[in-house]
Length: 166
Image (cartoon, rainbow, N blue to C red):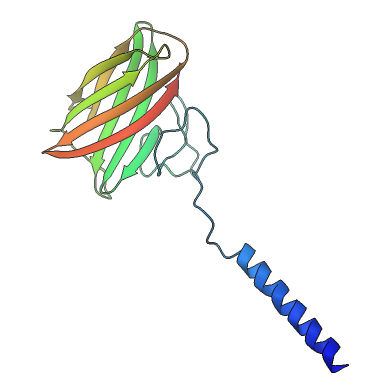
């Protein structure tokens, strides 16, 4: 009888150990949205949206404008895409700190890969009234666009990768 109790205790202990290992919480962090082609390419990201989309309060916007968000160290990078008759309007918010203070004096460039594989470079201009960088990508080709935003903040490079579909 003693051998049976030992076996039961051993099996129960192993079962508890396996159960604890499966639910230990050491699983890989998953993005806040399911992967899609519109997902920004970064480790910290939120679901992609345009200006016309509303962000639900329970989604993590990191205090943003409702666009694709990348938190890169001390910086908050956010891309919002808007369709226009003559092209695609790009709004880029470059902010710092927990309060997301705008950075007006950076040099910001957007390198865009069009759906056909060709490349365009846009020098983004700072809009002081709206406190973000803007640019217009001419054309209206349908498909996936890949955008790399290159920011130079007083010699410090802060870059972000995004995608959108038009």
